[in-house]
Structure formats: structure tokens, C-alpha cells
Length: 294
Length: 246
Image (cartoon, rainbow over all chains, first blue to last red; front, side):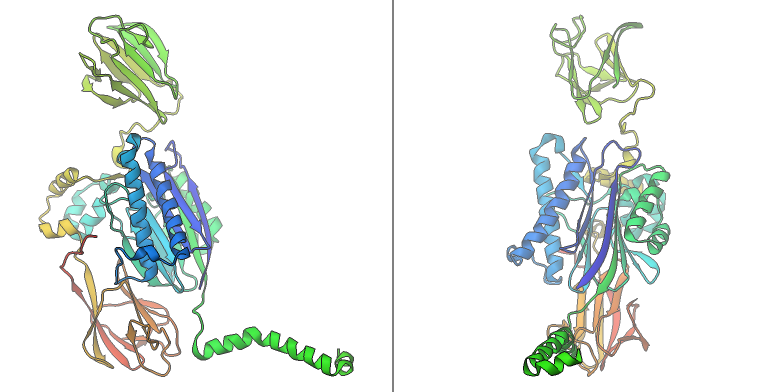
């Protein structure tokens, strides 16, 4: 079991007319998602909202009915929970794609998605698009998501050529949810430790605030204060885009006890009950003696 | 809200104000909002629709066409200072001084957008790449981690799963023997920057190159891993088989 302290803010920023970001924060499910919508005149916010709603509902439903609809496209190399998250992203892709075909004003809309999903003792990070997921562990910040931008992909394939491309290419996505019939998300499942910090954001944050600054702000504050400070900083520096931040702090990772530990845990949990019962038995047997003692 | 000024050559004929949520029609007939009495203008020539915070000019398949800044258009997202030409008349679209203007789309690259294939090809050309086709197509020359047994077993383990569990319990992906080894002792998981080994539970901690791992550490090529009595060596290999599309 993993216990997480969470906080989130979504802000329109200073330049954009509407907020096209969306998020969900489901502590009960251990699910945290940021989606950054785009395309169309008003459709960006529709796309991102559809994405987060579909993922939330899908995860909830598949927990309730025990993943029975997951027989299709099951990836053997991944855990059951990772498959569940992937299916939910595929489902949201279908929903957004269908909506964009149905409604003319929504044509071509799409969204990024970055999700964190906690299992018993691991965390799963999945993403499509360029909304970053950071993991802060041992005072170091690392990216858990894979940016699907033209620039980033060029950098890995061919660093020399990437240098020739200007910064104007940094927002060009090579993948998005809802723009095509199917989508492949990048997914990573890793062991989760106490005091791990996770930050999920939209590009409105990481365009303005460097990862070292994020590390510094998040490390010293609680999730609530950290969210506010990050958004304020991005707005101070122009607030050119919508800004969405989720900050998660892992408070406790408890492996379910087994073997001798399980027995000890049981004894510990029940010791009070056993003590109380013996006391009652004693009271019934020797009412006066016990009374005198108390 | 923005204004529209109807001009004939240099003389101003009339001012109109655009309202959010309302359309405005332009044409020769009397039932238009902006009436231009000129035979070069169609009965219903064009209209301006309010969309979100902006306005869009749409040509209604007029005979002589609508122009914005001397370009023939079918539909055009109006920006401050655009000049619409219909016949010999012109309409100037502008916001009054202190008004908030919607994104004018001039910083199109600032907005997030998805690449389409033709655009993609052009940019690939611009970046002058000599990348083999197979790589650009799949983008997946995935690196696979491989463990070879040095002791406690035989053969190789392919780390194809994103998380591989090692432990005493039979549900572990790799069963490891040893008195103090945890039920799930170690996991190895992929991350964008490589493979990480993490210690999960049990009295004996795993070792990488004789150094105990308390939490999690990145694996380098040819690292030697000790879990209980099992000894493994790690290395990576490029998997050139393309990931099958689902």
C-alpha cells in the first residue's frame, strides 16, 4: 500500500483566453492525470476534459469488474495495472477521435496525457505528448516521461541535426491522444519508495521553470505550497500558456506482510483485543480481586 | 468588441461593431447586415462568425470572391488590422485601443500542435538528416536489458517486461534462493534513461559490484549483481525488431 499526499492547481496563465488543460486527482484510486488539449478553436478544452474523464472512469470500472474487458491487446510483458492504464489511454484516444470526427468544430483536436498510477508497491508512469512527469528521489530530479516532440526525437536520433532546428520546433508533437485512430503510450513501472516526490505538469510550467527550480521549490515545501509557488513563478515569467501542476509526495510504502512478519503483525494488531478479553474473563472469574486492583 | 469600417476607395462609408455570439452578413441584398450596393458584390457575399473570442470571415461562394490583405480566401481568422476587400469596397477589421485581443495565431509555433506526415517530411529535409528509414519510421530502436547467470542458474534473462521481480516467492518473475532473501527482494525496471535496480524487502540487500543497494541504482553495462546466492551480470543490447503496432 502506498500513501500519498497530493495537491494540484490548474491556471489559465496570463495570455491565453481559455484553459485547455485538465486534470484528475483520485487519491482513492491512486490515479493522477494531466492533459493538455490543443487544436480547433474551442476544442482543446473538450479534448483534454474527455481524456481525463475517460481515463478516470475506465480505471474505476475495470477495478470494479476485475479487468474482465482487458483480454484484448493485453501486453504480456507488463503488469496487470500497467495494462489497465494503457487500455484507459487507448480508450480515451478512441473517445476523442470519435468526437472529433462527429463534430465539425472539433476536427483535429487532440490532447497530451501524462498519468501516474500507484499499485501495491510500485508506481506506473505513462505519457503521450510533451507534458512532463518528474521523479525526485535522493535530491535528484529525473524525467519519467518521454517527450514526444519533434525536437526531442531528433536529439536522440541525430544530435547534430537537432541543433540546427530552432526552438520553434519544441512544441511540435509527434504523437497525441485523439488525432489518429490509435495511439501508443510510453509506459514505465518502477519501485516506489518513501519520500519520493512526483511532479506532473503541462508545458506551461516547464517552458518557464527549469527542472532544478522545480526540485528546489518542491523539496522544501508541502505539496499545496509547492503547487502555488510553481504556478506563480511561471506566471511571473509571462504565463504564456495554461499552467497545470500536480505534486505528489509518497508518505508511506507498506509491503503487505508475509511469513513471520505477517504473524507478528497479526499478534500486534490483536494483542489489545486478547488483553481486553483476558481482563474480562478475569473480572468474571474473580470480580473482587480485579476490582480491588483497579 | 472589434469594429468594422466600410470604405469605398478612401472614403469611409459606415462603421459597424461586431458582437460576440452574433454573425454578420455582407452582400448586395437588403437583408444583409452590411449592404454594399455594387454589382460586383453577390447577393449574399460573405459572413463574419463569432467563434470563441475571435471572428472568422467566411466567403459564401461569391462570384467574385472575398480577399483579405489581397489574398483570396474561403475562410479567414480575422486579426487586428486586416483589410477585407469585396468588389471595390473594403472593410477594415480592428480592435479599439485597449481591448484584449484573442491569440492571433501569428505565434502558431508557440502553440502546441501535432505534426502531420507531409510537414514531418519537410522538417526532416530541413534538418538534413541521413537517418535510415527504418529508424525514423518506427522510432523504436528499443534497448533491451539482458542478465546472464554467473552463479545460481543457467542461461540468460531478457528484461523485456518493464518491471521484473526477483524473490523467494514462486510468483516472482525470477525465483532466487537464500535464507535472508525477501519474498520480493529486488525489482529491475526500465526508465527513460536506463534500467534501475531497486531493493524492496528482506534482510539481505542486493549488491551491485559488491556494493549494497539500499534503495535504487542505475545499472551500467557489465555490472555484477548479487541477490542472495545468485550472481548475475547485466548488459544491454539493441533490439532492432520494430515494436509491433497494436
